[in-house]
Length: 196
Image (cartoon, rainbow, N blue to C red; front, side):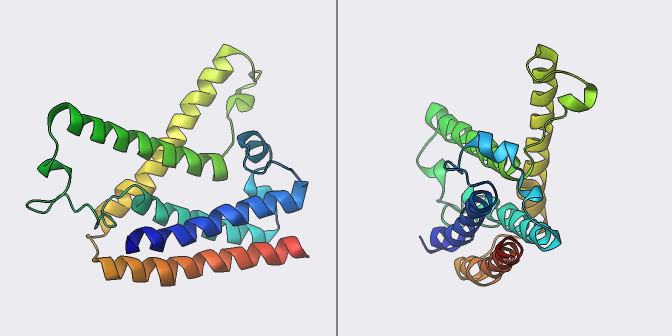
């Protein structure tokens, strides 16, 4: 429970900052609409301080993603590598397969949220394709899959390989102190540039 509360605060900082920046710049009513977010990429919402602020928020989101997905090094509540812990002690067969399938879907959804918030660009215009044609949709879908795979590579795989499992007090300290501090610095940069 403590680890869940620890990473929810930096995640809330990211969501509130992006919603506030879009609302302040374009005055949209529905700032959580994917159409509004894709038409107004966050990188265009401020100057150099805004850009640095959004880089910091992207870094925070990349670090929060493994905790949201309960992946190593932030998987202390499940700790499936323990002798009698995790899903393997209670489930097998189809039920265990459903757990693994939902875990995979959750990973793709979280990576898709990162792509939608920070990289909502399409590549079909680069090839001179119209947005409504089937080749343009296919090219943009392949480009989306590449972006999702890159996000999964950086936010799940590389962090999993680079850092060993942390104890619960280390996770809470990391999120409450360092990650929240980085998120607040990004928020202050964005507030500073958009407020002026």
